[in-house]
Length: 390
Image (tube, rainbow, N blue to C red):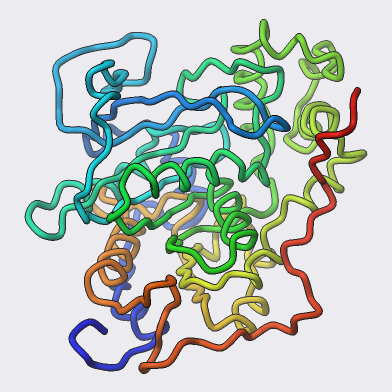
């Protein structure tokens, strides 16, 4: 710790986690999860948007990053609530040498920066004044949060390239800010894959986990609406059959009709195996705190990486008996998950010692590499080849 005392990752996570006492009227995972559809108002977070052009020719196009901003009165009907674009003057004076911690957020499937579950976390960090003030941004998946895609493909559960580019850009623009990360559902999967690919870095992750699609009809309909919203652009992709896509009922069928053809996966199963972040978890070399409810009806308990977490001292998994999928509603409408997330991030940012290369120390020593070097955890089946011409 920065005060000279000894600690370890498990103790930090335990100290970050308050008792989980949820609304007794929402007494199972289905009720907790269904309550998220009530579209609660939640904390009022304001954003200013910056558009980026991908620097990877294999994944060309634009994507949107929403930066948390001070409240403003302007409105932009082309963007989600409380979101406007940066002015040209603001874009020209974007860099800063302050040393406030910076949180990078990745949302869930078909979501965006407007989602209540992530705003509950942000409110506990960016709303604090003084020396513990945070900065934050949300990387919106292409086509989400009213972003208009500029190519004929959107995103998938292992598309780490926009995250990678954003992290590098933030490191250059804000050279003194330590970078941290949090992901929710599919966003946690993407962020974990990024961590596995990068190994030791300045990012620190707290996440939930991507698993089975039990509520797949609802999720499929959300994705179908997203595809229809951007039909003019996506219809330019000759590999997509919109007549078949419109007949899709379940998420696995959507992935078969869209993700497979768009990205070159022969089956949805091949896509799931390649996109899964479970092996990437073994490659993580920075502290990770994972939170999941056992009664999550979308991410089944059987899919959680219990054994992988046991093998990697950089990872801690916290499970709750109740909470549903990205729900955890307490009496009064607050969301429990925001508390351990914010506590953990504050402890890592303000109390924990990290050396100059980003390595985490426990009891004064750097954690040794726990995985046999012959096992390449982040090896992927889907490869980018810039020499192949279609």
